Image (tube, rainbow, N blue to C red; front, side, top):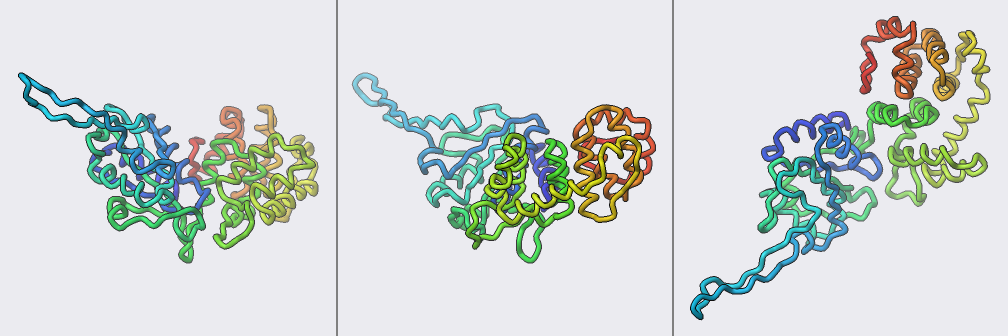
Length: 353
C-alpha cells in the first residue's frame, strides 16, 4: 500500500480507535514506516508514543508488583494480602489520545512479543487499560530483510490487520517515489537529490538482503545524505556519501552533480535566455540547479516565466521545488495565475493553488 494511502487509513482509524483493529505495517528497513505514523499523529494533533519492545523484557510491560499487607480486624484477617501492579510510565495515561506505536515488534524475542497479546486484543495489560482515545499501530521488518527478526506467533499475527508498506513488484516491496518526493518537498530536501531521483527512480531504494555493503540507498539514507551535504567539506563528500547511500548510488549521484558543469550559464537564464538542453539528464540537473539558485522574488518570477519553455513534467518539477522553498514568492509572481490554470490537473500534496 502506498504511504499516502496508509496515512489515510491511519487517520480514519484514529477517529474511532476503540473499534478499529490494530494495524501492523510490514516493510524493509529505511522506508519510513515509523516516520509516517508520527506524521499522522502530528497532522491530527494527537499524541505519539514510540515503544520499542525489542528493548524490553517480558515483565517490563506488566510493571512492578507492590505488595499490600493483609487487613486484620479483631485479630482476624478480613482481607488477604495482595500485589498491586504499577504500570510502566511509557504506557499512555488515562485520557490520553493518540497512537501507541510498537516499533520493531518482530525484533523482540518471542516472550516479549507474547506480552503484547492482551494489549493488542483486549486493550488491557493486567490491571492496566488503554485509554479510549489510544490506537495501536505496530511495525517490523520481514525475515527476508536480513534484520534481527523473530517469527511472530500465529496468535499475535491474528490480532492485527496486516499492511505491506510500498508498491509490491515481483514479491518485493518498494517505496513509492511520488509519495517520497511529496514528503521531500515538504521538508526541503536538496533539489539536487530530488532531481537525481526523478531521473533515476530506481536509486531511491536498492536493498539486497544478501549484499555485503554496509550502506545502501533507502528513503531514510537519502534523508541522511541531504543532511551530510549541508556541512561536509567538498573533498570528503564522495566518501561520506558512499558511507550513507552506498558506493553505487554515490557514484551515480556524483556523476549527476558533475553534469551540472555542462549546464548553460544559469545567469543567462535568469537574465532572459530560454535555452533548454536536449539531454534528459541535463534537464533534471538544470531544474534542480535553478531551484537551488533562486533567492529573490524577481528570480522566482523569472523561473516561473522560464518554466513555460520546459516540457510539462519538468515545468511541474521546477515549480513544485520553488513552492517548497517559498510558496509566497511563487504565488506573488505575475505568471502564477497562468501557470496554475495550465496545470490545474496536477495534484501536489502541498497546497499550491
